[in-house]
Image 1 (cartoon, rainbow over the protein chains, first blue to last red):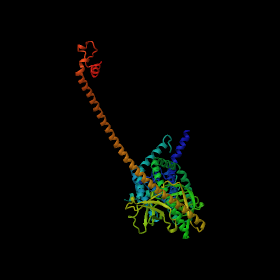
Image 2 (spheres, rainbow over the protein chains, first blue to last red; image 1 turned 90 degrees about the vertical axis):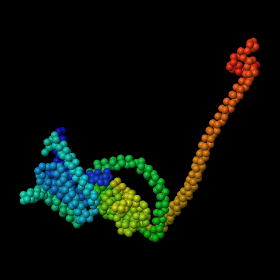
Image 3 (cartoon, rainbow over the protein chains, first blue to last red; image 1 turned 45 degrees about the vertical axis):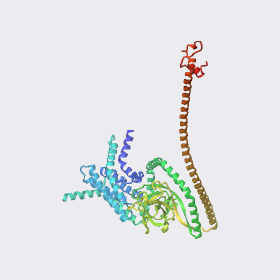
Length: 172
Length: 411
């Protein structure tokens, strides 16, 4: 019985980020049905950035690429655009990982803010100027703000989940 | 400077090119793929379109399944909200129902007259094939307001078809796959619908504001600020996109803000879509005299009903007047009655006081009479008189003594 539990935990530990990424992309958990006028955030950005820094091997780049394609289909943006943004986020995370000697959540958060500002600017330029989509700048700013603020919360939640999955099993 | 620049280059190169233990592609190659996808997609390359349609079919279905728990949560939330608002909504509905019932008959007459007049000028009606579809995904993303429906080219859905919820216009089909389609809602910023504002038949273009409202963007040279307080927004049928006269929403000019312009409140809550109706419009000529007769008959019947209703309304008004007058009289009489009752009570009190005084006087008279007789016959009845020693005598002050005095000394 304990070996079964251990296997389940091992599976969850290995595949939790990928499964969560696809569930989020397909489901877009954004609490929009609450009709909060000034609230939206991009959960997939938080997830990808966090796991690209902490455990880069857990989220394969190819999965991120496919998740981006799925997101484009769901949201209705030109196909390939979200993939590009996700991958730029991965580049930023990989760069931060390479240059960081002593990790800190605050520094990660600030770097994340700069990255999502760049990504959303690129997204805005691409959609508005190249593909003729109209976007509300104010909505984008709200989205960026809440994504940045919630990064700290979700980062701690992910760390807690990982600790739970690693405990008692010495999963590696 | 040189070593730090080298570090930066190394870190960037490593980020782009280094593959992890389980990575099959480097980031650079995947970014390259994404850009190729984007470029090919923007040029409507056939292969990319097929790939896109295949992905869409898979993703829409799987998204529907993955969304089930969230939808359950959302539905429950909506149910709770509805229960909380039930009383208010019920009251509002009752008052609206009364109003609508009275309006309905005149609307029917207008409709039939419209048909008859169109027949007279040999105009065409607009009829369409109706297809009903279920909403698969409703993401309400802040960037694109659209829903996915479970009908596609297999069910003869075409680009640009109008989508209705009940009788209200909610959007148009912007993307058609084999078994699914995407509907761009009227609340989306990219949605541009030719509309007319009634009354005054003002032509305009309506766009969404990205939330739950619409904005009137281009009004053809008309200043609306001094006109009616409420304007109804219909599709205008301009450019032949949709049939004219499909209701969309209402503009309440009380809520008019100078910076946002005219805001349209949609008749339908676009976040609560479950089933929708997709319509294509075709022109169809109607010239038969039988239909004309039927329509004329219907108009006559409706006119008769309307006259009856007018008559009943007048009767009601008269009876209301009479009732009001009677009520006024009744209240006046009630006031008078109350005053009379008060007077009656006061008079009764006065009579009672008078009676008391009279009875007191009678007592005094009796006392005086007794004192007078006492002077004359007191000795006959008194026990103290020696002459009366053999006779029956009474002690002074007793009732027997008093009776003896009043009987003038007779026992």
